[in-house]
Length: 316
Image 1 (cartoon, one colour):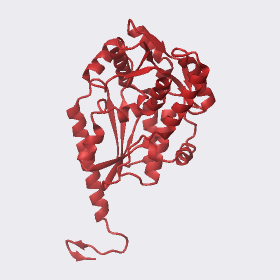
Image 2 (image 1 turned 90 degrees about the horizontal axis):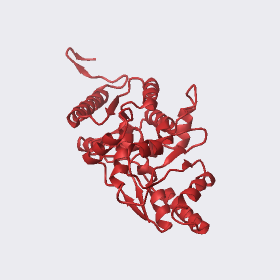
Image 3 (image 1 turned 60 degrees about the vertical axis):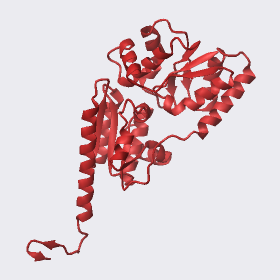
Image 4 (image 1 turned 30 degrees about the horizontal axis):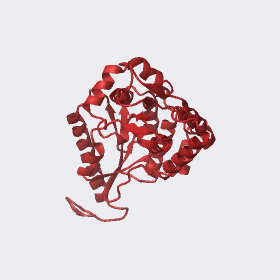
């Protein structure tokens, strides 16, 4: 049996789990190609206009797999942490895709509650039945998949650069190089290192989030706010670049919270959609890097208290 796995949305964080699970069941996994213009065009064609770009890209990945597999995985991810939820578009993602893309094969769309292994196994039992009815095989495949996922490292923390920015946003905006127009490579080429949310301790994130007047309802908001507040407080970076999908409701609130927390610290929001031009993005990145360099030069040249520096009338 061939199971199609679209290379979009949270594939970048959880693909080891899904691929290992179905492979251990005895199925062949077929992953869509990296996001490209053809994938994006397919997504725009099949998706509703009001959806954000990552959802459109996901539609494109599904459409590209339509004739290549016996079933397609469309994860209905509901929860990853207790008392928090994922973006509401994830909850209705299977319905969006099925009603927008005709002639799809069978769809694996059982709800995923990953707050603990017991609840996640409920998904595995339902999804695994499409491949095998053997409960022991499903149990072994699930345990192997969890083990592989726990060993999987994701994130960026480049230590070999003098200056570094905190690169924030939903994972699919950070790790899909086509959607973000290779921002990681562009920043590295300009001499700027990167740190992402995976390199901040959960305890520090919880501490910063606990200072808000209300607990975040969305996991993405909690992760990003806690990461950026910690990166700012611990001086882990020289500035912040936030990659945000146009029309993202969660980001519209979160960005304002971050601005309030970090004050006049260098902060740039890059809004992306299917119409975003690379030339404009390059210009903004270069201008932001130039500003960081001038800011650092100014700070390095500011004397400490009691130090004498030359001036136009002599010394003081």
